[in-house]
Length: 391
Image (cartoon, rainbow, N blue to C red):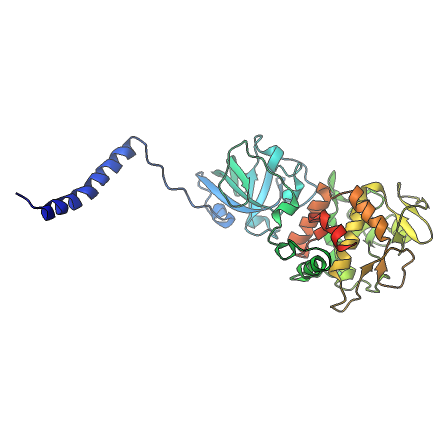
């Protein structure tokens, strides 16, 4: 009679074989689930246009429109382009993704322009779209790199929700500590533009959503052809919202070329604003409906009052005097020409609260970060920080 040891040896030999038979039997009946396929990079998806289903992760960089990709001024919700880097501008490194009706309300760029620069994971078919490497017929789309979800997925496409890592050093701080942290964040790893480079950048950051051949002028709100940039009457030029004389920085790389406070404006209107501080009141400005000016202040139209405030808030924490430039500060006065101050703080706080960041302002902030300067305006991403820093 076999002893206990022999029994154990027989069991040890039989168990693996039985498991193999059971697994094969279950496979025939369809029980085992195949291992999840690895998520592809955009480069892998571009080189693997096989018609197979795949999951791809990349950063939203624009809207394909056939022969080109729009980086702002989006015209539809049916397509988006993703890339392995949020700063990609070459279409050869982009994957064109079809956005079907189930996903348009959450992932279409016309409806959600602040998706630009966000990480997106998509499952679909690897096949050409717009005669370009593409991903069609999506079955799942989600922000981030986690598991995908079905067509009922919704997104909360706010810029601030996608910048946790960028602002990690500021979280939980307030007052001077918050200001110091934000200064370090927005001053680190920054790319500075030339003053000539600002011309081309503004044609992208301030493109008219209704007409991609035009820019939208800041104070007047007028749409004007991009080609009419210059110094003649009827042209648009580069308005320094933080006036150059309030710190004597001119047009050198740094505060003089910082896109976060440079906007296109009509030459005549720009000259009329000059170096005035900001406050309520004055006489109506010709050629810029809704704007008012007096001897020492300028009141912009209601739609951009908050934008003005946040641009000045940014400049005050970006340039703290620890580089070659003056320490820019906001005070509660007007008539600050010739000194590195801008006002009026109480009015700016009121404008900031009354006119919070909208989708266009958030999208512009993201475009500056992703394609040009590599830094952000914190008061667009986190409006609640303004009263803590400027109190």
